[in-house]
Image (cartoon, chains in turn yellow, brown, orange, cyan):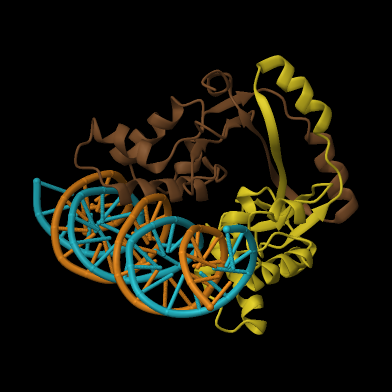
Length: 135
Length: 135
DNA sequence: TTATTATTGCAAATGATTTGCATTTGCATT
DNA sequence: AATGCAAATGCAAATCATTTGCAATAATAA
């Protein structure tokens, strides 16, 4: 991650965003990042968050996870082992699951179609335990 | 599909939207639907498309596929056998693939986690043949 | 120290989607 | 066929996430 930042200047804001992302186990919105960052850097601006995130995505450090049906993007650090999630359609909670049955399939499909596969998305939707209980 | 529409009134606009969707093999945007519909119903309004789509999604007739990173939703008819797609990150072309390795996995995960799974998303990203050729 | 340019904050712009409201229209009941 | 009611519609305006212009600030190289 560090090495990818070469060419960039030091930035307290960017460090803070990275630190926040490191502590998440699920993707979060720019607004969530903004609110957390503001606690320590009160004058930080939302557009700065967007710009930092954009750069981190470009550098391959952060992953954009546009999936919930609430029209807002969510972001997470790219890690060695990527994760998939179960997403509650009621409360939008994202619950990491630790399997990815797709590696071998990717190769098979790439061979068959000539499509140069660089990534994939796999998500499950439904109701989490909490929301099922609540009726 | 028909049966799900009971309680709704007849609507030329809705019929047209359904007819358009029936002829697609990939999800399309509201704007695309709008442009196609306008050819035969010139005074139809974009917000009507949105409202029709919203209703069809609520009725379970249409599926919202928010996935491309271009910040616009895409819609497709819910069919007996759902599809998955390979999506070109360059030209945004969506190429249907005909396998879905997830059914058994869904059951396994549902058992293990108590999550009531109602759906899933599986998409592959990369470069399609055309875009690979173009350099 | 100075020049260069990335980074930032703020306000305004953008663009997809949603909503308010008055009008039209489908359909059930006279 | 006439009437009433609510769904469906068109249009314009509002909303909301995201992007952008611009001037000010700050990191780094010379």
